[in-house]
Length: 404
Image (tube, rainbow, N blue to C red; front, side, top):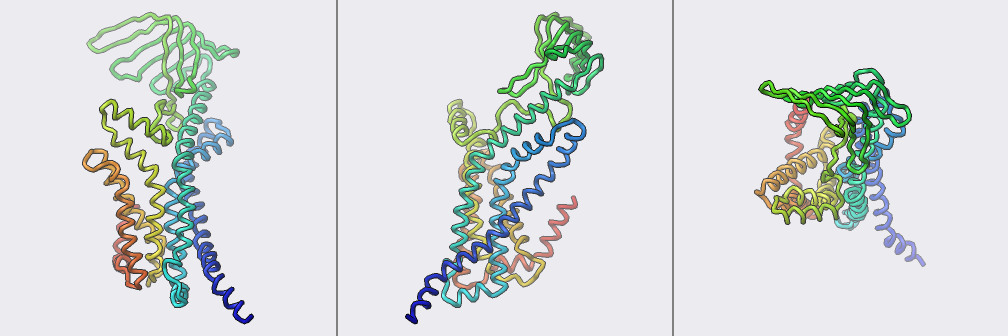
């Protein structure tokens, strides 16, 4: 009977440690996600407040827009937050000698890493959801919302017998606006979108229409004339029965969204079809292959960051100034520069586009495996020592870049 408590303690100890380590990682992980998300949204909030104050856009519309753009931030914030949270948790445990106590008790670094592996799998699943589904949904939804705002402003912003300059390159005058259907009568338009080819357009009637699918706004003019002055002193008069004029708002905060779908708006299956179609036409598919594989590589970077963060985190940092956040920032800057360089080479055809996307993850995994092996053998990791030695220069360079 005396052996039962001891046996229970030995069996339950790994569970207790796993739970303890998981909580140590999860708390900063959630906090960092919240801080980085709020910080990212702040760059948009001031412009959105201006829309509310100056253009009468409702608060509910603003909140919807913020909801739509959050996935575009989270696909990058989640891997960064995971990296920094593991560094913070394990660095604190190391500085408080808790890692040393665990090793003395016979707990290997692999067992200490188990909560990181489990959290990485969970975080990977969340990141896949945002990258595969929420990101394209948010991108196309935000475009449609901006389109609705533009359509509303195009209709509501017009006033009778007033020269309206809300549209890019156009000055529009309507003698009368019918309240029933918003149609215009007695229309005069100065079209100076092309500096070399200015036009004066007059029409008896017109109506603003919109295409929800294509997300464009058109002013359809009926029974009118175009007076056009061209180069070399030529002057043309063109009579028309129907003439469609595309409208673009001058305010760049609510301009008509691009009617063509970008790669950001496409799902995985749509991107695959696009790559196949481009190959069939004999065009260069590299940019689209890169965008397709980035949807897979970005969530997978979580495992590479976890592999790096564990050995770096358990290394004691001698100076307070050189924090885990700084180490994480350095890793992310290196990863970003490497990824950007490889993708640029991939788009130019110098490097295979698949290697261009996955190359940065492979490099990080190789470095992480080397560091993990050294940490398991209790060997010092020279990278941390080098970073501590060069920290002054690194901070000076970073500060200089921020001041530029």
